[in-house]
Image (cartoon, rainbow, N blue to C red; front, side, top):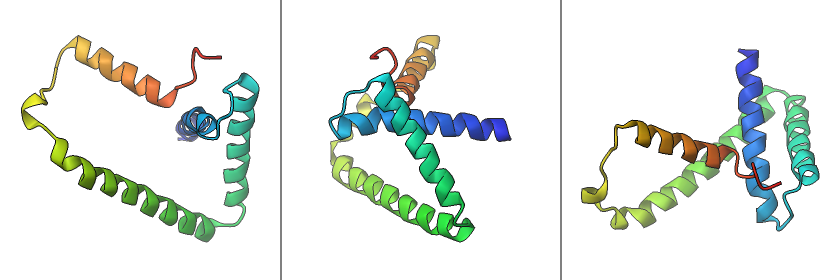
Length: 113
C-alpha cells in the first residue's frame, strides 16, 4: 500500500510540474522541474501536519473546483458531440494509442529536457 502511495504521489507531482511551469511561463529544466516537484511534496507534507480536518476541508474545496470545471466543459461541449464518429477500436493498435496518451498526460516533459 505504501508503495502505491509513493508511485501515485510521484506521478501526480511529475504531471503537476509539467503543466505548472509552462502555465507560469517558466522553462522546464531539470532544476525548475525538480524544485517544483520538491516544493509540492513539502507543501502537502506540511498540510498533513495540520491534521485530517484541515486536509478534509482542503480536499473538499479542491474537488468542488474540479467538478465545477468539468461541469463547465460538459455544458459547453455537449452540443459539439457527434455520436456517429465515436467508434471504439479494440485492437492492439488502440491499446497502444491509449498508453501513449496516458504517458503524454502524466509525463509531458519527458524528452524535452
